[in-house]
Image 1 (cartoon, rainbow, N blue to C red):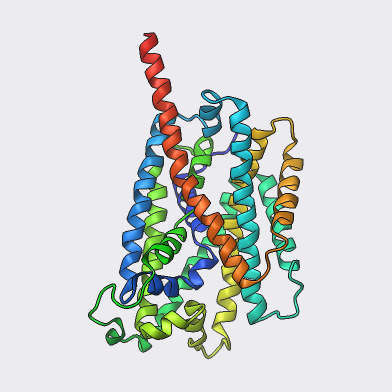
Image 2: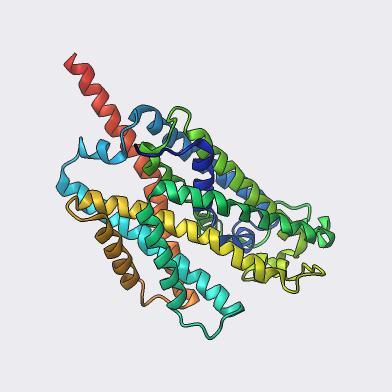
Length: 359
């Protein structure tokens, strides 16, 4: 009997999939996107994804327990579905590799300058292979254990002594800003909720299953808003705009009598959140490959996926290249996140209409 996911597991799994290494630079990107008091823009951007969650909730309701693959396969021909599945799988898997490389670049600059560039990525991929082969239920159990890393953000409370309301200024969304491009970058930090569509056959109680997904979105919005609010009060607007990783800089100012470098512990603990994001994306990509090529064995599918995505991104190593590629693939993911539930609802509506016409 297949084990099912409970609502709290779904909520934690989606939250851990959404949050990633981008939070280190999010306050700066928010300042560049919205200007002064840009932290307010986090809640505005979040509302866009609440609409997406409502669409996903409708899919949960009308799918009646059918997986997205069953819905697609019953309405669309294989010659269209196979390339569709493979393209999305490559986007998810390549993005996962780039997220691992981006995190490796950060810890390499800070702590391990002599570490070989691909060593960290290979270690992450080995763990990913093991957990993806174990199945989504074991991934969810591991995610619940790692959820304790949410406490990392609350350590920022030690910086409230340096928080100044005057740095927030009475002006809202003033100053130089790139609303279109940088605003889109802020929105990309909320992606990952679309992975809940792959969980339909694994959720214990599908009725109201969108609620834990909505909870994860609201929790993420709260974490992002608090992080950015403290950043805007800790740095001046100009300082924040020039800080590459404001979050890490704030952790550097925290001092405990029993810990010499707090930011070192934080960034290593944050590895678990990055790891879960990578694993869930690879799990979703593996599901797509197995339905695109049904005859392939589960073990071979994930191995091929890991190798192909690693080779596709092997030339991307510098910070500039990583940011460019991650932005491109995240933008593609943004389209997928909204396109999938709309397309599924359209196919379900067509099926319902056909049944009514037959009657």
